[in-house]
Length: 235
Figure 1 (cartoon, rainbow, N blue to C red):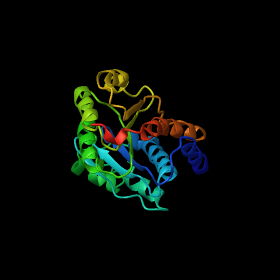
Figure 2: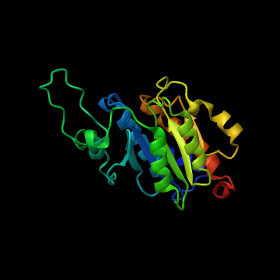
Figure 3: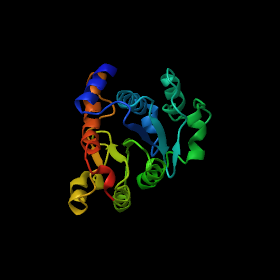
Figure 4: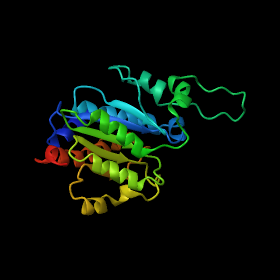
């Protein structure tokens, strides 16, 4: 898989070491963490990062606020996943106890699983990575975005001229209609906003055999944007 992903990156004319990959996990609901969805998403993001850069992706999680998670150490991906991408199923009886991993212990501190703000997370990331010396591919996992259309659109506008590409991704049929479905309209009203793409057919539970095709779909829009000659001068 790693070799195929590297070939996909080269086919997009992306040179290794000239990009930064950031994964942003939605902490809206705990259900995705109880199954395979989040851990598969993390593994795919790691493969994308390995194809585009020399280090592993930064990982963030957002509820009402946005928090950076501990770094994934080389050779310790599965340990990291067990700590930060997995939760035991909610107990039926109150006396049942869930696995006490770092994510479970951080739920209250991070304000997770009570809804989340995409626009607030975008603002945090814009401030952290807005001065990056290389283009940043932000793989932005979205579970819901009710009532945030205008704020998200404004964040897209604020990111003009920044080295940030917002690759929003959601599970197939998992999202209601939002401004992410109207990025063509956004670009008609603000033609300079070329640094965003929405893949609403990103099926988190897709078979492993199709992973490379999904990952290639993730980097194609980013590659087009990264090659724009005036990308850094806009704003």
